[in-house]
Length: 407
View 1 (cartoon, rainbow, N blue to C red):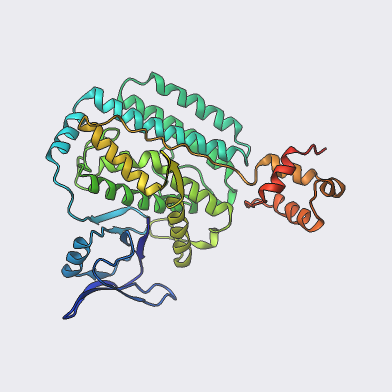
View 2 (view 1 turned 90 degrees about the vertical axis):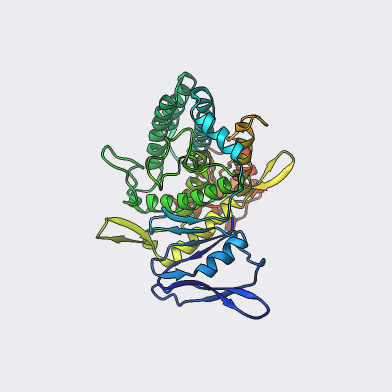
């Protein structure tokens, strides 16, 4: 995952025709104190995986669209809140047999339920893993316990609507745990209230929405590469209007945790703070400041590009999304088994758990000396343990502290 992000006013993408070559010229937009920047790229030497534009002024020439398509570079136009308004994708493979199998599966209640169950099971599994990770740092034991109790109902679901009910009940408890863990100044009340979606009514939701926009782009690209029909899903209903991409929404579910984890860590590490957002009085939403947006996109990029072991190989998460999509296509064509959307195994480790913080604060100078921890290191550890922000301690020191008996 390596998108070229363009924003601000007067974004321009065009082709400069030269006798020996045609170069793509990109002018990034002007925003606040940010001045426009120029970039030039030769054919077949475009170093980015996609182009993402969230500016609302400028143009992309027809010749530029031709250049991007021939070089297999997708273009996504996003709104300020991260929602994908439009996508221009390279030509997809013509696989009539695959699409026919997809339509048949979507109309087969048994097969539709099987695929939807795998998607929900994976999402719930990842959600519970993330809650366990969050619970190492925050007092959310009750919320985690209730979420796991709701998740146990998945085995009793016998239809897609029942799957959606279980998923919704787990999600409600999931976000209740987040609400309890997050600092009050974020004013996070959850993703949905009794009357409406919270959209970007607080900075945390604003960051989630923006991150989900990049996840949606990754899923759209994977579907396009494999040759599936994006509007025909299994967990979400068929498209009843043009912009609804049911299969895209389906494939997002097992991977939403990537964005959730990125956003939590952004605020915990103070990479994002309240001053990184501004409130708009016309639609009552929070939006990113320019510099904060770039920092956040970089954090999302690093999360998606993190390596994970799968079948003896180290793969990035964007590669895994495409691989799972391809496995789904093979399953629909009866050429492979149902993909395990919850794989590969996820290992989340807290560097600043409640147990570690408690032991640090209870540690005396003499006990620290016995453990081989110097005065300056102990001061650093105490200061950070008293701080609500996340911190890191070396594996060696953490091991000594967690094994030590501190009164």
